[in-house]
Length: 335
Image (cartoon, rainbow, N blue to C red; front, side, top):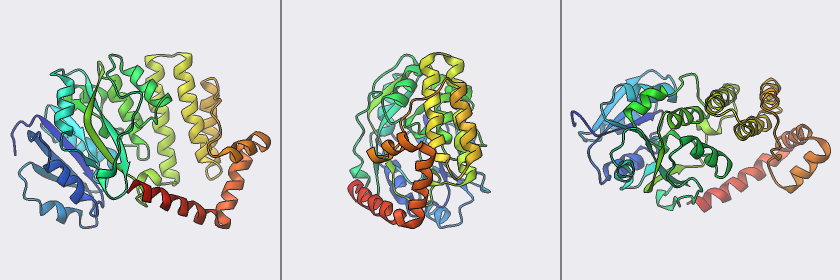
C-alpha cells in the first residue's frame, strides 16, 4: 500500500455482498493507480467482509466498526485515510476506468476547487449507464451557481460520489453530519461545494449509480429516514441562504421543502407541517403537485392532501401492484 497515496477512495459498506465484485473490479481497472481504497465495514452481517478479504490487493485497507450509519462510516474512512484528495464511492455502484485520472486532470493542480463527474443509472449492467447531459456539466468559478443550476435546471443529484475533493476543502466543509441518513448527501455536497473556490467538470469521468435495489436507504419511508430528509434540507438550505439570502435561493429552498411535504403526507402529518412552515418562512412555493396530469388536475380541484390520501387508499387497494409492474418495466429499460 502506498505510504502517501495521491487519492484516498473511501467506500462505506453495509451488507453489500451482491454488488461488491462490480465496484471492486471497477476500482482495480483504474488507469490511475496512485490511490488507496479505504473500506469501512459498517457492521455488515452478510458476506461483505469475506468478499473483501478475498481481494489480494495491496491498495485495499479494511476498517471494521459497529453499525453507525453511512455518514459516520464515510467520516471514519476519511479520518483514517492518507491521500491528498478524497473520492467517495458507494459499495453498490461503479466508475469507469478513466474516472480518477479524469477528475484529477480537471483540477489542473489546484487544491481549492473540486472536480465533478458525469453520472448515469443502471440496474445490473453498469455498461448501460448512459451519462446524463446536464446543464451543470461544465466549469463554474462560483460553486453557488453550480448548486443553483443543478437544483433548478437538472435533477439535483447531490451524491457525495460526484466529487474529487482536496483534503483541505473536505476539512473546511466538516464532512458528513452523523445524524443524517436519508438524503445525507444534500447537506454534505452543499457544504463541500461552498467550501471550495469553484467546480471543474471532468467529462470523461462517469459514475454508474445502481438503481432498483429493494431495501436501500434511498427507498426508505420510515419515520427516521424522513426526519433525516427534513434535517438535511434544513441544514443545506441554511448554508445556501447564509451564502446568498436572495429571492432565487429562498424559492429554491421553499420548493425543496414543498417536495418533501408532498412525500411526507399523509404518513407523517407533523413532519408535513414542519416542512410547510419552512415553505412559508421562505416566502412560499409554486411547485406543482408531482405525478401525471390526472393527479395535478385533481390536486387543483380537491387540494393535494386529499389527492395524497386517495393515492394511499389506491395503494392499499392494489395500486402498489400496478406501480410495481411499472417499476419492473423501468428497470428492464435500465438493463
